[in-house]
Image (cartoon, rainbow, N blue to C red; front, side, top):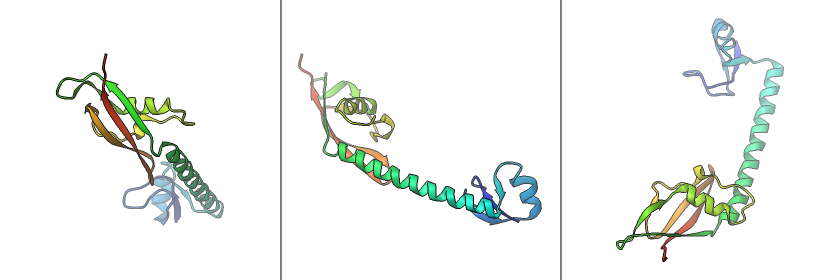
Length: 151
């Protein structure tokens, strides 16, 4: 019996794969559990249509990420923070702070803090380069300057 997997099944295949299984395993386990459906002509056509839609969606997402990267390219953010004599901040600059300030720069999209790849909050005066991952293949760096706040 040939089935099309809806989800990845251990030792069998990934989602969307067409695999041959014993009739009982397919009929009694895979199909009732919602892990697969029978590989009929109609279902094969549906699988091909879904794969074509997924490719088109992936291409659109990539192009949108490149468009957004062009807006972020060369962006430099400045933060004025209180700091001690040794340059350590009384607080820190986090990914949320970076995303919030970038969003005030007139972007036509909302920069989500989860795609700002700051490993640890910035806790000292100076300049840092912070990567932003917009897509699996699209990354852009934002320069972040942390300056002393003079009251």
